[in-house]
Length: 229
Ligand code: E4P
Image (cartoon, rainbow, N blue to C red):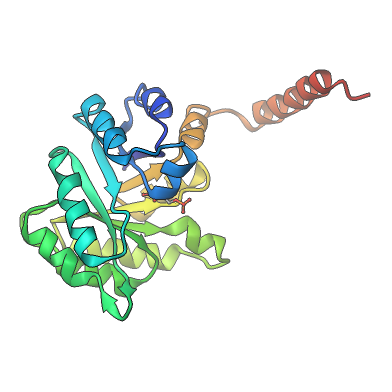
């Protein structure tokens, strides 16, 4: 499985890039807000310049078709390693699928985002032009957040994407380290992981006893630091 880092803080990106297992980045407007980014284009240019060998996904901002098209073309021009994130949804009664098709026919690499249903997976897959490179992002954690078991959806998505050499399946909305192993076991191609969870990945292999001990030591440290008595 390929591991990408999910976030828009350039300092975090530099830190996670020290891990050889990280081969890409995903961002979204909410992550940019969290990182305090106000100038999208200059942020995106800086990231592409620093990480020319990583897969990087940037999302369009608009919900209006004409503006989405313009934004996608601008993002695509930033670099060959850029995937333009675009949702497959119906806005004011109109599906974004024809726009996705149009962009794909121009040879733009796309990352179809915010997917939670098989209908969306299938619709996105039929919109890609042959010989293009694309990502299908399924928001597994958000499905689980809503109280639903995402396993069957992930399995069906894996089977559908396997039929399309022009697409890779990405597990998005990662919530815990265990998700990396679940995604790998289910045959997902890529998982995008927040930097805090990437840091935890380095603790893999700790014995249960050590986890217990570290937990208690953590409590002890916090008791001392807070002056609790
Ligand atoms: C990545 O491409 C997604 O935008 C991200 O994983 C979404 O995460 P969230 O559901 O925690 O916002």
